[in-house]
Image (cartoon, rainbow, N blue to C red; front, side, top):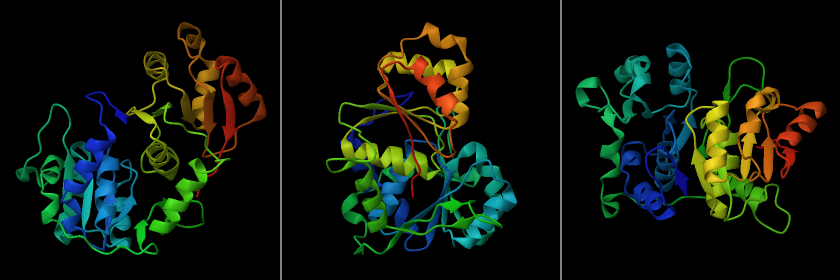
Length: 291
């Protein structure tokens, strides 16, 4: 299911890890702030959802004050992040917020750092965890939106709303997104945004597609991965489209496997759309707006 720099993660192993993770045993109904890197992001979100906890996503580039404001507004009890961002969260430990760090490949996490290791949270026995009753109308996520005046505001999404949103994208005879079990979808978009997590990760999981997770966008690296893994779906934002159009390096790579490119977040000019299609001769192109 997930293709990463370390090793593939199958649907079975993701399900097992999500159910075995006791992270949500300490983060019941009050929300949880997550600014993790994939695939730990997906694992923690599903683990929290299983136990009726709530996830609110945060941009890891937020300032200490901005993170504190979001944590307070959502009554956060736990934050899952990378160790390199942990210093900006030290002030929240005074409010009894548990800081969980995802181990980097060459680092280890210790309690002395003020963090709990994410690996520890995946070692629990599922039979020992609570099994709360979940109503379709229970809130499962509170992503922050900056699409209004003033400070960003939390948007409450219920279990029913999230499932319905995913079904609209990939189920039925005429879905908004025509993902299939044979697709390989590359994702370098930020996980804290609903475009990446809802429209791509969860929708791909629903259809059984493989997801190639890339920690950041670097044009040549992305094109090399498209060529190596025969990527079929490339979700983008307009600045990424512009990078493809302007780069002469596209001629060095075989991009013929791409059958669909999806642009979201902002409007894409027609001339830019026409130009990028010349780079991906076998792809159809569409613009989307989710949630």
